Length: 539
Image (cartoon, rainbow, N blue to C red; front, side, top):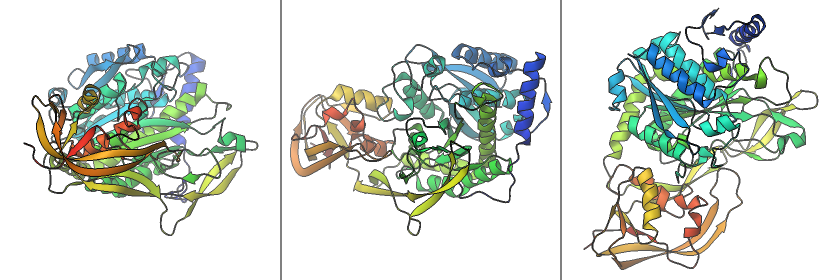
């Protein structure tokens, strides 16, 4: 979908609220006092200022400042807020979270969501995308002491402002291990991604929101052709083909369109998400389809899952605050608030579908199928789309026509086996399955089983466009009777995460564990694959 598509051209671009926020910030810096603007309200003294506000928008909130601020919110609102630490980063920094609810003890005990819609929001997985964390801190304050307090009648929150504290403090995209956390949710190699997934599994949110920013000025790619992208905010949903069909449809047809309309009415140009544009001749697709990102991983858990990606401004601009952080944070906060409003308006329908999806995972069906591969394909009748780009030299806006692959096309569908047996690399694979909360056991005695053995004929690195599988394998399968030795790792698929187990263990899956660089070498051409499909009962 084009960035222009879905916009109401009759709605004027109103920036009254943001203009007031910027004027308040400027006044504070000049006068030497600190004020802030509550979106939807009037400028005034803050009951509790975030670290960014205290710094007059001149300095980002450090990990230490975030910890102190969340602790202060808990002290001032101890009946509705609790500050916890989910774990620690690769660099030893705390992964702070704040629980907010009118039934705080129930939420803190991680009881399944009941009368209130449970929402989890994570910010700043990339350390150079700073506004997500700042917006979450402002949202937390506003829920407890400001204009968003009315949301607590219907919603409760698990807020994770800094998903990558190492990157924030080092002004670096990755964590201290130099890993991009946002694509680590298949292999879960990093403590930050493991802590975030553990929180997702523990609190079972009905709604999950992942906050990101994307640079409009791409010096090494699109800028060399003389253009910048031109967007303010984009919204994406979880879009792996194995996500519960009712959750996916309601996200796509009801919740996201409502959120977009609300944001547009507030004057912010918001659109459906499209992938990064790095060349004026590329094909346009939407967000990633695999389980490597937390948005799709949350969708597999049954959550209504959303990405909000707002504008990271060009570095050569002149802005009221460094990096335009005041305006960037305001855009993020507005986008989150309006998405929450859309979720609140549909809270009963969202809760019913999310919780039904989780219940269905408890029941293994006969001939249950999974799609191992998802790619984008052409949309019938819409081979191209128009997208607005901005010329760097003179700032003029131009519409460019791109080839369009906007339809999710699942493939490699097959019926789940009864179980998997792993006869080599058991410790390494078992550790990852444990991180993914997949049940498994180690056989103490040999078993005779009928199995499907996959022989890897060829395996090549695929130079496909972004979002597609990185490895292509030619595989021959044979049915045979095997004797599994003691020590075999056994994964019975009569468990809630049975589809996830197949997506991670099948070498043809583009969500496979073996797509990750640490595990790809384990799939060896010319050899039988060490993960066996078990087709019936063993003896």
